[in-house]
Image (cartoon, rainbow, N blue to C red; front, top):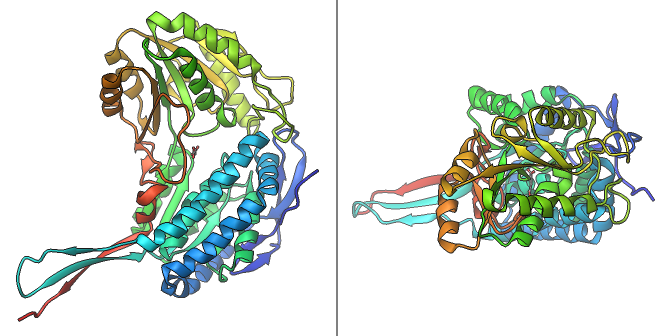
Length: 480
Ligand code: SIN
């Protein structure tokens, strides 16, 4: 049964139908699920103005009061988790079990940041002269705008909105055109939880650049947060700083290496590689993009992985037991097909997969490629599909060099039983997040974010709250 959902935008505490609408598709079948408002620059400005009006009242509430509303929102999300998971799966294609995991992950930011807001402490700084006293205080940055991706229709919203709201900011959100329904379900629950009008606004659109331009250039918006491609992130970041010097947070592309050293527990490494590589059919920014395997165990590891991967059940995410859903759209399928074809033509071998899957037009068979070399695009570019390229290395230095040979630095993974190597490699790897002997790590308490061209700023944990707070230094002078 299809889950119920709202399909109008949400601005200033009101549901807005809009004059034009665009279609939302189920990526498993390409069937139209809904039509939602195709809003533009004027409605974005209205939403920003509403957030600006709501800001003083929301910021003035005690952190505890904001936390109570956020707690109620969290409780409503958890009580509605089955519907939210079905919605995530329906519009995003994610297998139901994974979608349920995302809904809980998404809700956890509301709970955690509501609690954390009570601890947004400033500092007392020891004075440099008897005539003065120094303190710093933390204050909400103001109206925030956020542009979120389709691969986590819920969690990437709450990972931005929860710390912003907890800090006392108000927010205007543009969800992706592929998955706006989950964002609207979130607004519906926020309204029920008691969010005042204008505090959380959702502008749906099929014209991302018109809405993004207003968000970046508006002088009422003081913080802009984007999760998506590095190419788009660079342009948006430049527009934000170049126009109004607003604070920017960017969660961009990755090219995560997963290194398997010869001293690793091979079964654990295979399990970790599958978890990391095939999560959301390979469509997360932290999915292991390429798997580097030490020469001595290359064949053993490849065989074990190639044995396990075909057992992953492929199909529409909404069906029971499915582990690999469809890719988000036709462009995504074509990109994966092209990258695999190029690798095969350049000497790689498909141990399993290597082609589309009969489940439907947007399904790709989980694939393991061996004999992959450093120059192939499956090593140098983010695949965003269920394809595991295996690259051979001989020494620790070589592994680290291949791992770091990329402009990206979001996540990395490695498997070893040697504690000294674990420290050494963790320190040498150039990425914002390193996971040792574990293929998955995301949760609300950790600082999620990248080095190099993978982004700016951190989401999650105490660092995530700081993004939405300005630090103000105050000097008390005139002491006799
Ligand atoms: C992402 O793909 O950007 C988010 C992944 C996560 O939160 O684990």
